Image (cartoon, rainbow, N blue to C red; front, side):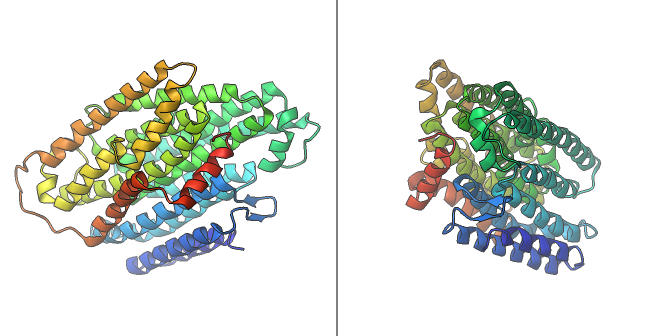
Length: 478
C-alpha cells in the first residue's frame, strides 16, 4: 500500500540529504522526493479509502489537500533549482541545509493530510513548525531571526492550545455510550451524538484558536507577514499554498465531529466571524503595503478568511471553499515564485524600489499581472467562480448584508494589491531599462501555476469536480 510510503520515502531522502555536501546532489534528492510524492499521491486516487491501522486513513478531504500539497511541493522543488543555485553564490554555507528541512517539512504536512488520529495530526502540525523554522532563518539576517522566533513562539503557543482542545474533546466523548478508546476521527464521530455539549464547544473553540494561529486567521495571524517576508520564495510558496491548508484541515477535523454531534451552528458562527475578521483586516493592511512579499502574505490571510466563511455558511458554499483552496494554492504559489524572480534581480522586497518589471523582466511582469488578476478574483480565473459561489451563499443567508460586506472587503483588497503591484510593473526603471535574461525554470513553474488558475476557471475535470463534491459532503456541503 502506498499510503505510508509517501511519508516514509521522502523522510528517508530528507535524512540522506543531511549527509550531502554538494548542492547539486541535494537538489537531485529534492527532485526525487517530489517525484516519489507525486507518484504516490496520484496512485492513491485509485484507492481513496486507503487505511493503515488506526493512525492513517485517507478520505476525500484528505486526498484533496494531499494533492494540493504534492503539486505545490513539486513546483517549489523545481523552482528551488535556479533559486538555490543563485543563493549558493551568496550563502554557500547554508544552502546544503535547505533541502533536508524542506523534505522533512513535506513529510510532516503529508501526515497531517492522511492522519485519522487527532493526536498524530497534532504532532504532525507541530512537526511542520520545527521543520520549517530553519527554512525561515535561511538568510541568517537579523530580520530573519526575529521572524523565526516569532513564528516559533506564536505557533507553539497555538499548538499548545490545540492540544488542550484535543484533551477537551476526549473529555466530551468520555460520557458517551458510543465512546471507544483512542483518538481516531472515526471513533470520535461515532461518539459525537452522545458527547457533552459544553465540553465539545470548548474543544472546538480551542482547536479553532490553536490551529487558527497556524492557519493565519485574524487575530492570531501576526506571525505570518513577517515569516513570509523573510522566507526564501519556494518556502513562502509552501507556507501559503500548502501549510495554511494543513492547518485549515486540522480545524475541519474538529468541525466534522461537531457535525456528527448534530450541534454545529455555534461552530459555523465562529468560522464566519473569524473569516470576515481575516478578510477585513487583511484588506486594510494590503492598502499601501510597502513590502510586496508581505502584501502576498496578507493576501493569504484574506483568502484563508474566504475559505473559513465558505465552510461557516454551509451548503454549496462549502464546495466553494474546497474549490477556493485549490485556486488559492495555485495563484499564491505562482505569485511567490514571481516574487523570487523580482527579488533575485532587484535585491529588495520594498515595492517602492522596484520599477519597470514589465520592461526589465517581461515574462515575469506578464505572469505577475496575470496572477494578480487571478488572485483578485477576476473572470475567467477559477478564483472568481469559487468566490462567486461563496458570495451567493452570503446573500442567501439569514443576513444578506454579509454579501455587501464581502464584496466591499474583496474590492478593497483587490485595489490595495493593484496599488502596490501596478507601479512595480508599469513605472519606468530609473537606472536600467535593459531586458534581463530570465531562467527558464523561474518562468516555467509560475507559468504552470497561472495556467492552472486559468484552466480551473474555464473547465473543471470531472474527476476533480467529483473530489470537490465528496470533500464538501464530509462537511455537510452539497
